[in-house]
Amino acid sequence: MAAPHRVQALPGGARLVVESMPERHSTSVVLMFAGGSRLEDDRLGGVSHFIEHLYFKGTRRRPSSKEIADAIEGVGGFINASTDKELTAYWARVPSEHMNLGVDVLFDIVANSRLDPVDVEKERMVILDELRMYQDQPQEMVQNLFEELIWPGHPLGRDIAGTEESVSRLSRDDILEYADAHYRLPNLVVGAAGSLDVEQTVEGVAKSLSLRADMDGAVSPSAPAPLTGPRVLVRRRETEQAHICLGARALSYMHPDRYALDLLNTVLGEGMSSRLFLNIRERLSLAYDVHSFTQKHRDTGYLGVYIGVDPKKAVDAVNAVLVELRGLGETEVSADELARAKEFTKGRLRLELETTNGVAFWLTYQELLLGEIKTIEEELTLVDAVTASDLKRVADQVLSGPLQMSVIGPFARDSGFRLAIGA
Amino acid sequence: MAGRAAAEGIRKAIALVNSVADEAGDEEITPTEIAEAIRDCLELSKVDEVPNVRRYLGEALDAVSDGMPADFVAMTLYAALGALREGTPH
View 1: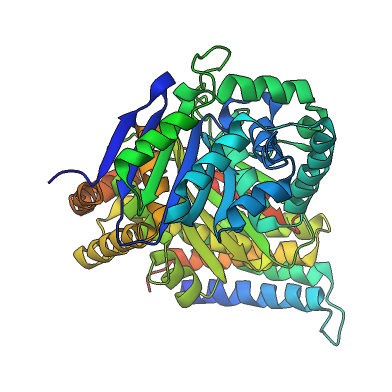
View 2 (view 1 turned 30 degrees about the horizontal axis):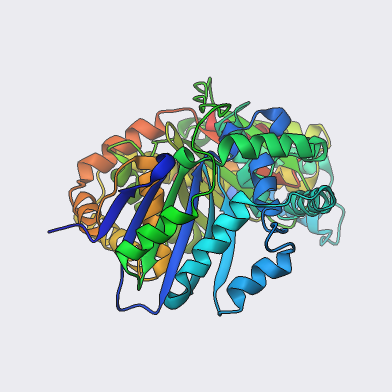
């Protein structure tokens, strides 16, 4: 069966991925640039995120953020952007007849931004406030601390928004130089999905390419160094709840076992029928919020567990989670549990791909980071092919690595936590 | 049976610590009484049969000696109780 999408090489090294969804009323367009915060050294920490904010402040044709927003919201559409550790994405979702407007506004903001010095200073204050806001959100902050432990001294372990120090120091010249080096056509994949004409879309996007085509000055990502042993990081805060993240390095999104890892994560801690929820919350009543999650990058990743718990029960809850983790490497999951995890994973993927935005992001992400696009049928087949023995093997592999644990709560000592993971 | 006795001993120590933490007791509980309750647990053979129970109790005793907050002592005792629970057949 022919793939429902088409990949088109564009002038200058950019690529376009397009899928026609004729039954929809909207079209979504995504401009996705390779890079993100993992390419930043300590001095430039947060520059990708800073640029993403600044690009919405005004262009030569649309000199203010209001005019940018009005252009898209004036037709009922949405426009937004996000910075990740390995990419930055700008997107618009508009009624289909306005797709060319969406393409035009997105290319306008990434190619013609004014980067006004006054806006740089205003946005710096906004980002510093954003960074300070995270300090008051322990559930977010504990995950950032966990990532510091998983990738110590590496840009992947740093907050995408940078640090207060780095953001305070970034100059307009730093920002201009970084943007010029990374916002180039070979770094760009454009995605479009919705009620569209494929040929017209290719033509319209090709005409909008106004970024530079050559690459110089962009750096390649470095791999994080191996972890030397288990570590605990306790940040003392007089919070009512203890917030804990623990886990280990896991697999990259390029790894053939990534589907097994996702199913392992589902069995462990996704949803109310997962082992963590049933055992830690329902059976032992140890924690109100307990779930697991994965993060995957080009050459690394992790499997983590979050626990929100009464501080008095914190170490007990950690130990109970460790029992669940060890169990995954000791005994194969049952056929029922595996079947449920597969249906959960496949169902979530289908739901994600119901919207034009979901499809545009999914295609663009695959083309940019994986270098190839799997159809949903191919993806579902790979999920179905995973066996219980694969899960046990992957659990054993992942959990034999050194565990890392970050804790935020009213704790004067870390000894109980260190004892729990042998740190 | 030894497991049950150890669990009851730890629960008693937790109750003492919690009454200090909550300031709920009619009589003032002294650190000596809490330390005594923990030492009673350490004398039970079961604490050596299950991994980490003795170490958590030792941590709790050190925390009492060092004047650590009651909540911290309670957390360490709950960890000992949890280790005992996990190490004892259901």
